[in-house]
Image (cartoon, rainbow, N blue to C red; front, side, top):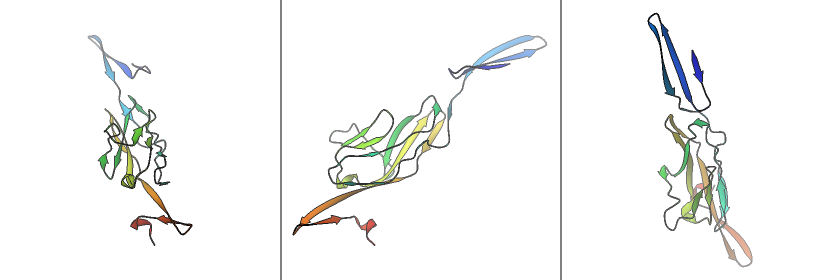
Length: 143
């Protein structure tokens, strides 16, 4: 007989001719797919932007972190303008050119690790010349 509770604890009972025994085990899972992957965004220099990430469901609930160009971001580092919300979204408080890059959301618990699709963050810099606004793009956006 197998009785599982929402607390992720299952009791397994084994019946044999000489009697029975039972044992408890803890179940850990993480779903394969993100509920919402982050998507690419463009933002003007010194403006705020949010990269949303809804991590896969899991037991226990997975921790969410972010990577930029394959390197973990450190939102708590002094001078950082990045915040990870309690929902796991990445907020760039005041976009800088150095914030441009490829961002991925990482979801992890004891059952496994999932990495989201890549979102490209592009920071646009406007320059005023002779009453005309020019938009400066990085080389990857030039045709």
